[in-house]
Amino acid sequence: MSVIVGVGVVIVNEYGQVLFGKRSGKHAPYWSIFGGHVDVGETFEQCAIREIKEETGLIIQSPEVYGICNNLQTYQQEGKHTISVCLLAKHPGGEPKLMEPEKCEQLMWCDPDNLPEPHFEASRNAIKMWQENRFYLIK
View (cartoon, rainbow, N blue to C red):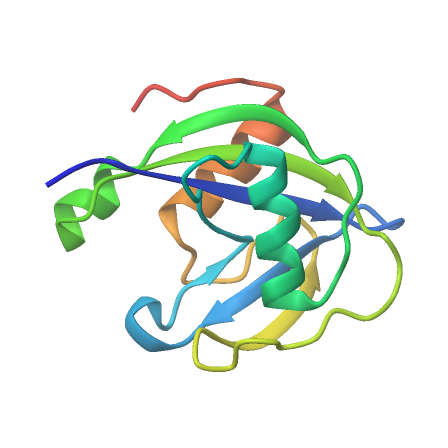
């Protein structure tokens, strides 16, 4: 077994709201920011741009790494250990779309101080680190 590296992208619109998706499939019924696994040879920024386009149809510009989280609660629950590199991006305009309905059943812009529940661990950590201007959370 190995540790998997992924990205989580906090996309913020002009009203300070963050884009969340309600997961379907194996991660249902959790809400989460968008992201995914880093491909071999890919930068974190390239991964963020690719995953956001694949999942929402949005073309983000210049996402910036701001933190990292070690998702141990998810490992204890699922046996899959992921490290999430957290990136921040401005909403590029346009309406996000459900591009992968087998993975995500609903989209919502939401106040980051009032997260939709139940909420995925890595997403909750990413939002908390962004709000508190922290690079890493120690559990």
